[in-house]
Image (cartoon, rainbow, N blue to C red; front, side):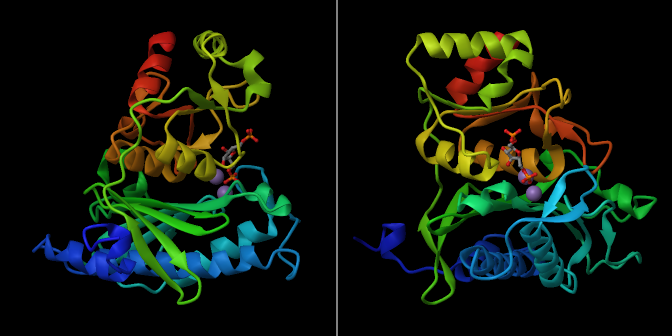
Length: 330
Ligand code: AHG
Ligand code: MN
Ligand code: MN
């Protein structure tokens, strides 16, 4: 191990963010402050996940979220944790979450000190928690447009406007993958010191891999192009992996290659995944790693949102595999 090797040079996520700031003379430190509160929340969520079945965090509540989905106890715990960590941070004007019907306006004034918006899926793949499967947190950071009227309209920005995006995977270890538009960095939480340490700098997705990730049980209701791609993949010795949590599936694809699909289905004709806090942050990470992301035949990050909870179909992963799916869709 050498000091050139990221794992050979001990660097915490806080030090990494300070190092990044130095490359941006215009930086005010507010983005670093917001990202560090997300890391704090994620450590708390990781600790709760780890205590599943020892603490009362499993199972569903009687409530449903705005999408009409049953909320798991940990969905609510994770959401409250993120809101508690982010709610009072300087630099943040609006937060929006899968679990809240409306974006939460933290500041209505034209306060120049609050130029950012944070969107998140507090717990992705939450039903996996009951069976000790991988779950995650996904986040997206946008600039706040103070001219928006009403204020909540400031959230409706395409993914190309994201200034940072990331996810945390709560698996056998807790992994944080982050981009601030300057490549993709990977950190692992060292639980013995409570700190995320950099383990890989400028992560690149493999160009291709004979692997796809999709809930194939719905295949009969996929549009024809997807069915044809899957038939081609069957004939060409592809393997299939599906965790049921986008974070877990895409983390594997980021490291090993392949394509993740969530096509339109009979029950979700527009697709199931949410544009603003699932598809867009993942698209920014995968594109920054050299991959591609489309919803149908449109680049995911160019879709103009109309509602914070908009759903889209998703084709994302290694560039050659995404191109191949596109060929079948066109
Ligand atoms: P969430 O738990 O935030 O609602 O997200 C679950 C999502 C995503 O993580 C996963 O890829 C997909 O739903 C699984 O859906 P199916 O069960 O329909 O395959
Ligand atoms: Mn999700
Ligand atoms: Mn969720």
